[in-house]
Image 1 (spheres, rainbow, N blue to C red):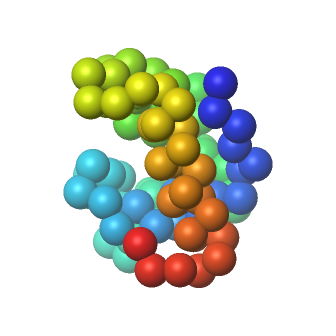
Image 2 (tube, helix red, strand yellow; image 1 turned 120 degrees about the horizontal axis):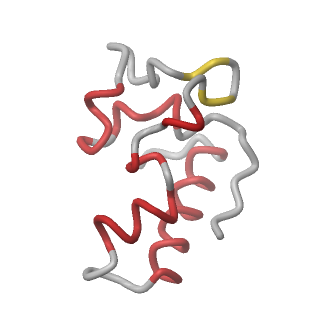
Length: 84
């Protein structure tokens, strides 16, 4: 299972990904973000569910370990305020 520390940075930067453009409130931040947490967590889109999103969209392209590694890499870049 993907270990998220709930910093909210991925949800504050969804404008950087075409996958999430429907969730963008217009400034690159998810329209459902409340503080650092998801306001619709239990019913959030599958794209926002790391493990389920992997099964639905990325399973045929890479291993789960590779997928996690990419997600953690993006997470660290966001935390270090590096350009994606």
